[in-house]
Length: 282
Image 1 (cartoon, helix red, strand yellow):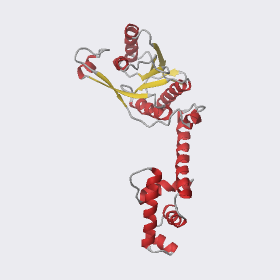
Image 2: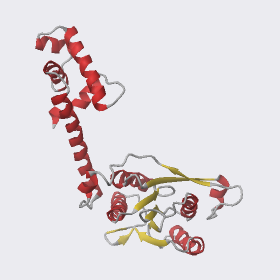
Image 3: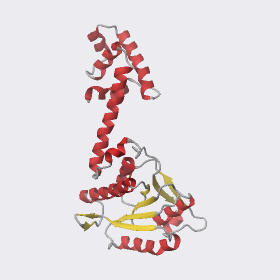
Image 4: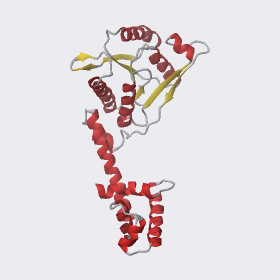
């Protein structure tokens, strides 16, 4: 049994098949969630209504203990017919962010399936995952046997297969201070801005530590003219009354130290400028 309860969130396209196959795959992994949340457009749309009806008939038989919930996307109190216009896209993003955020605040694990829905929901689903997921959460794409996909059957038959493909992402992480910073942010666009500010602060901290503790005063004079003033090596040599060879030696030393500080294989002049620039910019 999982340590924390888990929920599978699926933005519904027109196929109930994606949901049942995903559940089948998670059961084979011994990773079956306790809850299923299907996010969908207007219930009265024929494709949506048909898919929901198939799920209502199938899930009690195959997953009787699953807590099955649906959520109709809406904007200004009116159900969304689709997710294409800017206000519809924004509303859908708000819903996905709010649902995942609420689950994470309740210490739940989240599986998010982004197959089969609108591309906008796929993109925003990935954005939500990067903002709010931690290592126990999963972002999935579903692949299935061509004959199975064509048939529309809710479960694989003999010789057919379905697989959940994990989508790699680098989450900020609920266990980091970042999630605490987002705990009170209920608007996903504000959350993205907050993360951007935190990222800039992180870049500034790394550059500040490097500048103040890792380079010599002579090296600092060189990289300050290089990064802050945009001078080339000959101009730096002239400004500091040094030989071009001495400037090059200082830069080689800085490259080596920067490689160790940022833990990368190699750093050139362009990369060095990009890494240290936040010290003077912010």
